[in-house]
Image (cartoon, rainbow, N blue to C red):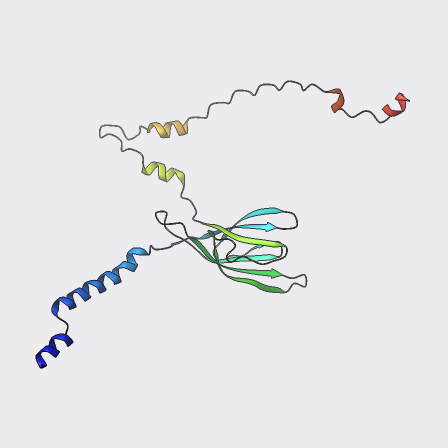
Length: 202
């Protein structure tokens, strides 16, 4: 009887190995499933003035404040997923309102998501602000084109410029002169009659 209790109560070596394998898979899986977020130095917002109907494009560096009407918008973080992952753009934003008395009141603090602009929106009677994307300053185009340029042949002199560089150094061709626009025919009903025309017809 004792022997049977020991077999049921104690796990066998195969069960311990199986448990260790399952634990290793579970610990490794979150690292595989979650990609690192890309930290961006600029948050891009759209801002609507409800009175004029004007939509403005705001590019705000992280931890800097830009005023839009009576609002002060300050992004603290702007994260995106890598281009190989499903798009997800989020920014932690603080929005303050400047009252007519000069008093500043915080009206929004929280996360905004570019994929769901209505999820966490700024509630204001005159202005709307929402996140559209995050931006990283682009590198100069010349360094990227030089990086992908083919290597010169071994026997070529060093002073010879590659064809792409020679084309860039050549002056651009002059554009042909624009054709003269034909004079528009003035239609009699499209012209405004002189001020005294009514008196001549009586």
